Amino acid sequence: MLHGTLTVVTRIRPSKVEALESLLKEVDQRIRQGQPHPFEQVDGLYFGRWGILSPGPDGERLLALGMDFSTEDGRYRKRLNEFLTRFVDALAEHRREPGAQAFDAIYRTCVGYPAKGLRKPTRVREFLQAHSVHFTARHVDFAYRVETATGMRRLLALSEAVEHHLNTSSNQLEELVRDGPDGLERVQHELHERIQEDRSVQPDPEWHQRWDHARRSAARATLLYPALRYLVAVPTVGLFMGIGWLEKKVRGALRRRASTAEGPAARRAAAMPRYVREPQGQVQNPMIHVAMLEPGVGNRIALWMTLRSVNLRLRRYVAGLSHIRVIHCARWVILKTKRRGKGALFRPRTRRLLFFTNYDGSWESYIDSFIDDAEVRSFLVSIWKDTEDFPARAKGRPFLEPFKAWIHQKQVPTRVWYSAHFHRPEGRVEPAINDLHHVLQLRGLLARDSLSAPEPEETLRSFLSRGVFSPGPELMRAREWLSYILTRRAPREPGRRLTQWRDHVAKRAITRLRTPTRPAAAAALPPATPASRAAAAPGRHPGARASWLQGHGRRLLPAAEDRGPQPSPDVAAGDTP
Image (cartoon, rainbow, N blue to C red; front, side, top):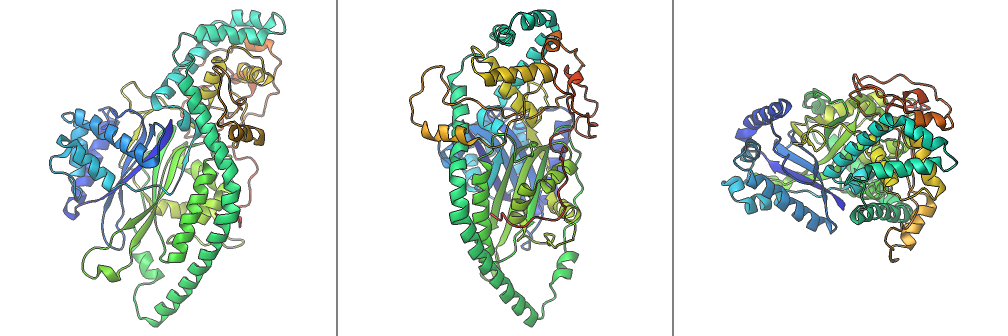
């Protein structure tokens, strides 16, 4: 299984802009009141959102649709066509329902939409495909490369069932743990037999294939990234950045000679109004950010090469993004607007850099996590440094607050948002990234026939004593990715893995309806050294209760807000691509 990304950008009719804004507001209010979402019937869709981009120099208003979905193996265009067919057919099948009618009404305000709408699904699919824009770089968390949205719901239910069994069978588990040195294996067998009826943990060759495919893709990226960065990206980006610097000097000389009223002061006067942030959810939240690119061929080529290098870099991660474990999916899209009207040949094209993301926690903690991680901060600065009004870097000058103000200014409202965790007919769940990694590791542990290796035994011990699996490295170890590379064509025996699975989850903080008691089986295990307890950050899980492992010093601070040693607020130089 592969993760797919679709971005559709369409022109809004000038006379229909206000009507579209009112319609999207009405649709969003209906969804918040509990009415069906237009996308809830689409299988394999993780996230979706609509946003209206602010007008550029040409004055056009654009409607942007961004979706993240799961699909089968194949090249990008094949995956895109397969999902578009599934997406449009699902809407056409329910075209008499309010959700599909709202989709038709939204796109009737755009230029070129078929007059008959979803009654002609083939034309609607061709319209969406003609206005789709390829992503330039993206980050997809490892959980979305392995499991579908429906599978994630099953695994979350499995996690609840396991914890309920641990709480209700504490006496039996305590006896198993104390009955000899193989007590942990007996506990694993007991859980394995107890949960075996659940379809989520039954032997599934396709699940193992998806897991191996995702790990193998990360292994290839780990192998290729150093060569691409140091042999291709760094020299190419340096060359075209030099060309861009010369272009800026030439444009500056021409502007000084020409008597024009437009300058930095005029640009600030015509700047867009400050964006009013929409209400945030308890866990998952969307964001759309749009920045205008500065003119210049050299800088554009350098930006494209930087984004392609970043795209390969992000594919290496198997647990979060560096030390940031709050991002579900994110993408960068370079959007070019065609020149229209009289004198279009002599006007420069409008180019925007779109950034779509779905993240956990509050907006403040999300942005702080970018600044606090020097590695992530460096490549974000290299991406956005050639956009309009980006805060200049200078030694001794603070960067955090100007960077937040710039993001806030360039952010556009998410008019309608869809999450498979929130808006499916089965009900609402609120898993964070840490929760998804937890259930993936739990599923792999329960599917094992035995604990013959020391690593699974230590994993089960960690789960029983602390309730979470030990956080693993964000990147694959050298031995593991080399094993995937060298054995990619080796025949695979039934029930045999190519490599040992590595711990790749972080501590979780999932909302519970009640506070269960700690099972007595955990008391028989060697106690872990309690860590200092940090206060829970407000805004992440308001009113959330602790899990059954509260007595083991589990920290409740979300991963994005547990930043450890604070680095310097100044931007670090280097690591441009």
